[in-house]
Length: 385
Ligand code: NZQ
Ligand code: ZN
Image (cartoon, rainbow, N blue to C red; front, side):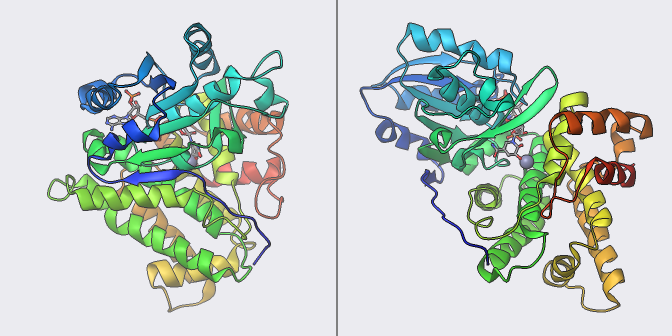
């Protein structure tokens, strides 16, 4: 196992009715800005619950944070923050609202010229407003990690700082009942791929990390499809297990002390940046291709994955690996997401542009061994046609 330091500082309030925890979790003297998206929280009753619970707080609101949040939208919150001396942000929504709020939090106290610089130029984030969140879509893990992804002019780029990690996250599975099938699927796939990118690398004998990762993968394979069929989709245990699995998938625990490979995400971000494809649907297209093109480097872990996740113990190594890849794709199909570029109307002619963007964004040495050069990314995209 590799050396690591691990801490996850986000307090989780899990379970039905936990939105009430907000009244104690946010200091009473705070001036709170409640941030949210396009209005789903108004139609499913989450907004009303938050309003009730904040009755003793001074609060304001900022809405309109879109999926794949945009720099221009997020910068609009800055005036409100200054005008009302906001000193606490409460994000209520999915990963986009939480990510967007992280950017708002850091931008509010940024002393340089343009807050985009901490993304494009890697300028350090020295301070940020404190954040809490009510998560409404289990997927990204953003509710208890230090990461955020923001888009400006078609450039979708990540940044991270411990200063923007939420102080607390309310995970109430009942608020996920209003999600569309598409968003449920997206969430399960996003979480699944987060786990795979911290697991499917090379072995460092991190037994705890491997077994946790395998347990989370199995949970998503078992529970994900149940959230799409009428008989079980409103079962709060199903929703709760998916929600907790998605949080655990990217809260730092399974990634501590093991190599990681974020190539699927980085290639996927270009597909969203250029063509607006849902985040998870880029991942379901790219991951199977990464499994094929990088099968040699990932051989040992692929065999472990084949045996422990799909019970494949017969046949030679190559056939078990290709069967495990097939079963992964089959799971993605059960979850109703695309697994090929052609299914989202993209073909070979788009690949040059995507490779150019990856290169422009410095994504030229991806993968756990930094050997996924633009040429290898091209092979991956070709394998995804
Ligand atoms: O905007 P509203 O009206 O709230 O509607 C949203 C949005 O249209 C809707 N929604 C959310 N909760 C709902 C609901 N609809 C009904 N009922 C509910 N309870 O769902 C739509 C999608 O929301 P979004 O927040 O965009 O989805 P998700 O949580 O999948 O977030 C995706 C974003 O997170 C980034 C992605 O790149 C993408 O920008 N990621 C962030 C990561 C992180 N911070 O660690 C890691 C991930 O890999 C990912 O990159
Ligand atoms: Zn993701």
